Image (cartoon, rainbow, N blue to C red; front, side):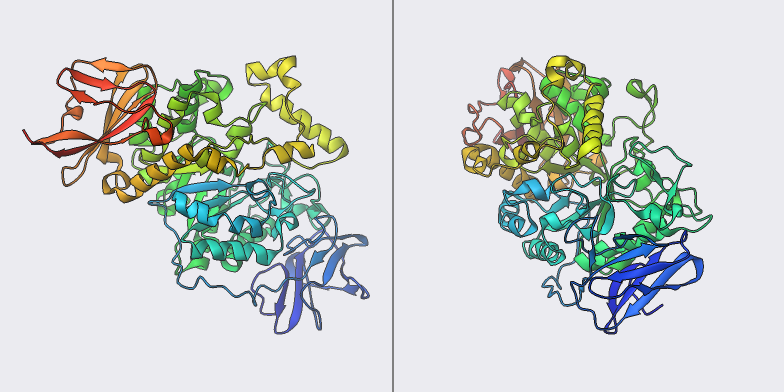
Length: 619
C-alpha cells in the first residue's frame, strides 16, 4: 500500500491515483475507470484490494466490480456527481486555498448553536448560497452552526439521515470545494461549523456495501432504522475503520469544528474500547492544535457519554436535552400527547433544568415504563444543549408548525428569553430567530414501493399523537416524497423584515447573554430559583461582585403579590432591583413594562419575562 492518508477510498499519492477498498467477501475486485479497460486489483491481507494508477486527473469517474457483479460506487467515494447509484469521481483536496490558518477552533463554553439544513436554508439550497447568509448569523450572535447531514443520499432532496456514502458531500448542495468554501467563510466570520453525522445506520437505497462484505453489518442488535452497523473487533472490522476514517476526514479535509453524533443509543459496540471513545480521541488528535466539540443525540439521556474514558465515559462535550424542549412545548401549548406525557411545563421543571440539566436522571419515566437517564448532577451547564425547536420536533406534526405558531406572542417571547438566558448551551433551529413562517416537514425523495413504505412509516410514527391518529389529520400529513413538501419547508427570508421585532428580540437576548459575565458564566451552583404560581417562577443568578440578576418568567396571567417570602428575591446589601430587560418592550411587539417591584408589592406581567439587576440603592 502506498503512503496513503486514509485507509480506504481513492486519493492522490505521489502523482498517482491510489485506490483501496475492503471487500472481504470477494475473490476478485476490478477497478472500472470510465473510458479505460477494467483493471484487476491486488488482493492484500485481511480482505483489502488496492491498485495505483498513473495519469488520472481529478474528476475521473470510476467504480468497482465485485466478483463480476456491479459495477458499484466506491464505499469511500469522495464525490458522487450523479448520486449514489452511478460513478464515483476522483477528488484532490490538496489545492484548496484555505484562509483560516489563524482559526483556533471551538470549545463548548459560550456557544450559541444554530441548526441548519442546507437544502432549505436558502431558496437555492446550496453551500454557495448559504455563504451569503453568514453575515445575518454573525449579526444575530450565532457562534456555532450545526449542519444537518450532507453525506450522499439518493434523490434530489432529503434530511440526510439516510446517507449511504459517508465520505461524499451530497452533490445536490454543490461540489466538495463549495463545502470547504462555506466552512472557510464561516471561520472568517468568526463562526464555527460542526457536522451532523449518522453512524448508527445507512439508508436503504444506494447502499451497496453488502456486495463487498457482510462484515459491515451485524444481526446481533436490533436497530429501528435497518441493519445495525458492525463496529466490534472480534473479526474483520471494516465498518469501524470506515467510520473512524470518515470522522477524521471531515475534521481534516473540511476543517469542521467537530461533529454531532446522531442517535448514539443505536451505536452498538462491545469491543474493549467503544467506537465512540476511539472516535472522540482520534478526532481531537486530528484537529490539534485546534479545539473541536463533539456532541451527541442520545434518547435515553445517558450522561455517562460525557464523562472521560477513565471515568467510564466516552468524552463527548455535550448532549441534546430533550427534557427542556418537552417542558417548553407543554408550557406553550398545554398539550401532553405521546412522549410529552411525563412533562408538565411546570415552573419547577424549568428551575430544575437550569440547575441540573436533564430532568430525568434515573427515575421512573412512565412513557417508557422504566427508568430514564443516569445521574448528571456533576455536569456543567454547557454540557446540556437546550432548544425549543429542532428538525425532528418541528416536523413531528401534520402541519410542521414552529413553536411561536402554537402559542401566544407573549409566551413565545418569554420562552425565547428562557431559552437564551438559562444556563446551558442554547440552540436555535434555522429561522427561529426571525419567527419563520415556513413549516418544516419530513421529506425524502424516494420512489416506488420505498416511497410508499416511508410515507406509511411516517404516518404510523405520528399516530402516537392522539389527534394525528384521526382520519381528518392523517389526510393532512404531507407525503415525504412530494416535491411540494420539500419546497414548503424552505425559509422565506422576507420574514426577516416582516418579523423584525422577533429578530430584534433574539439578537438582544444573545448579545445580553454573551456580554454579561453573570449570565454566560452561571455555573450549576451559580443559579437558584423559586416557584411563585402555577405558571410563574424566577431564577436568581449570583455574581461575584454582587451585581446579581433576577429573571422572572410568567407564562400565565398577571401576578400581583404583596410580598414574596423567599430570600432569593431579596437584593444584595445596599442594593435594589433595576429593570435590565423585558420581553414586553415595544421594540419586540410587547405592550410595555410597568414597575416590577413597588412599595405595595410585586407586579409580574402575564406572559412575559423580565430581567432585573441588582444596583446600589439610594436608600
